[in-house]
Image 1 (cartoon, rainbow, N blue to C red):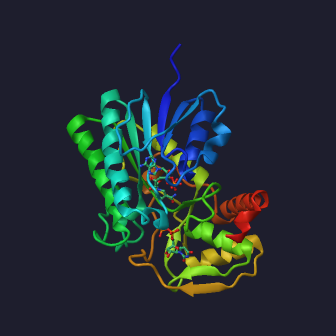
Image 2: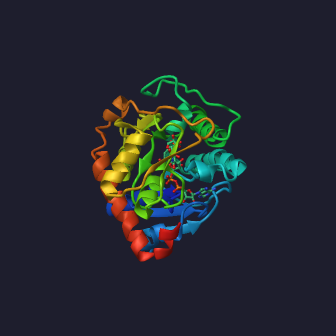
Image 3: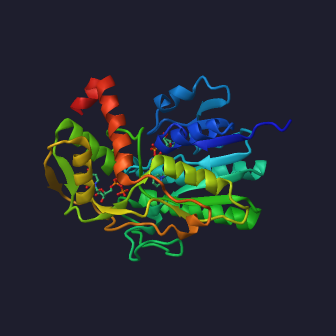
Length: 321
Ligand code: NAD
Ligand code: UDP
């Protein structure tokens, strides 16, 4: 009998990683989850701990890792601006050294490896919507650069390892994704607005609120990652994964207020430096994998609001912020 496939998920105790681990286990895979709990938590994968095919290792991807696996999903990296800007040098190290270590591991094992890249490689895009041929408009020395340039360098490393060492690589450019298990205080717009609405606090709109984002529900995104990993050898990406429905932050705020029934008022605060003005993925290439997001914003918000409401009911201190 062929042994079960063993898959490594770095950053597996984070928001996206924990959903990915869950889905891989459900598909019959053995999952090795590696995380240093910088922004993730054991609690995110506590429900998987007893699973016979699940293993969790505390490890920093800036250090080499010696394990035996068939496939690697490299998700380790803080993703929320307040998290990745807290220790920007560490953010760049995680992206760049993490990529080098995981690519080195993939090379030794002959394993297929997928990189969780980001729409941030397009920076504040001068082209709209963004397709994968666009090289981006990134400030190399600003407060977001540790993340944007770290992820760009990781993409470079992936393609050089392919050219130089013939690795089987996959690069996903992930656009804003939301859903249950986001941290209530991680500063991202969807979690901020929902928590503010549920607490009856004012909704913090940065700038005029006309800047846009396209929000993908987590289940759709995880489906895209799994399809990409299973794609033919020559399909490397980079490929955009995101929901092409585009909303301004004011529209998002109104959708959250409608979903929660909250009467919170909108409060306009200064726009952070280098905040991209608009973002929407062209997902034509992802469509060739048979992938398309299925969850409209209203439905995804409903599930996410329910999650945060349950969290607040179970841990009342969260209500106080
Ligand atoms: P997250 O912060 O919830 O998860 C990141 C995980 O990586 C955490 O569990 C964290 O503890 C772990 N980690 C950080 N540094 C590490 C290190 N040095 N060694 C080991 N583990 C480390 O964020 P997320 O939203 O789940 O994002 C996951 C990945 O997807 C990230 O690489 C992120 O850049 C990418 N991404 C996410 C989004 C999004 O909207 N959620 C968008 C674009 C790209
Ligand atoms: N934003 C906002 N209020 C908040 C948090 C964020 O208006 O409380 C805005 C932010 O300025 C940006 C958008 O929402 O224009 C998305 O921010 P997020 O941090 O979620 O993701 P990113 O900027 O990385 O796309």
